Image (tube, rainbow, N blue to C red):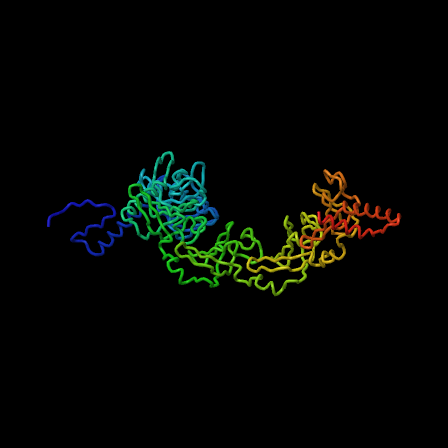
Length: 584
């Protein structure tokens, strides 16, 4: 073999010559390792250099690390204290360290972990470059945006935090995300990031994929993005669809928020997809069978059902019987006795109630319910409790032009018509005699169950005084009374309490009387004779003219009698006068 020339480094294995023994070769290898170690020991650390080190000791103020040189390095312990004040390092941990320039602590060269991490981070960032993607943790809010820890502090403008800028950004603090590098200047330590750009890219990608496969009739999953009065917008994956409030439930729904909330994940059906306009209509109720299809099999007239009050209107209350099925209790079907002006007087939203089905109309999606039908109609048994002729006592609930209403029991009132207040007194308005809340007695006159009416009478508590009038006031009898009223057609005279007679204008005088008001005033005392008693109309006709004529004739008869002629009594003369008046 010919001689060969080799070039090798210190660390190369020595070449074994033909005459070398094994012992000589081993000594040669040991000598090479020693030479390497010697060279390393002579090597001095360079300021700004970053190397790996192992933690060997933790003291009160510093952490000592082995960097492979003659002496250990020291890192101030504050660099290992986290935001909670806890030490986040232990002996044996491997860390990156940065050599400071010409400083030492108790003979140890001074190192920095933070500067090493920053330098490594900048190298990673520089490798990604502007437009690259890095990961970081949002650490706080600053003017105009937020700070992000990516090994160094970066700035995230407020407009680049989310797809929809604004709102409370506190929710992002502490979250780790991917970011796009917008601006990078290591010398100035300037690093600007964007999360929004990546979100937009993801959204556009998802939108393209969604639109490529979307078709009417599909059941798709989406997330509620926003809620309006008329419906909810659902994100189907980069593209929004409108879920109208009428397509949320088979039943009544006042507002979309009663059914869904922002962030909810829904399975919805694509009802309509207009590719040209990019509009998508969605349905939630269409994903389940229409409960009204066989409603007649589950709900029959006359059955008692249970449900929850979901809505109150001026005309009634809607009761949810099951998902998508509601019935209406009209205000007129809420109570047998109470006059319910608004359902809120009896029911409240959320209340569980029982009702009776009055009717089912699947075609118009209507179920009529009755609340009062769950109880016995008191009007069907009121005749048993209050037979005609029963004397009752109660408070006056209301006063009208035509009578007074008296409370008999809860919700049941009886009417005393104005004509049944007094046998004798002409009552123009019940308010002349009664006040609301006054306790009075009355007699049951009639019960109309069908129309739910109860007729009462107050005058029937006493006997009708007119039954004695014909006997007490026979035609021709002389009466005395007080004027109670003067009208154009005559004078009313009270001849006993509650009993009046009328002196017609033609019966005031033999001479023509232009107006009764010229002859008498209210309060005047007058005498007259009874002409007639009408029991049907309850009227008494009186006459002053007849009284005067009889008196004049009596005087004449008395005078003639003094001359020796036959005389007649005043009563006979009065009867004769009345007979003539009747014939006339």
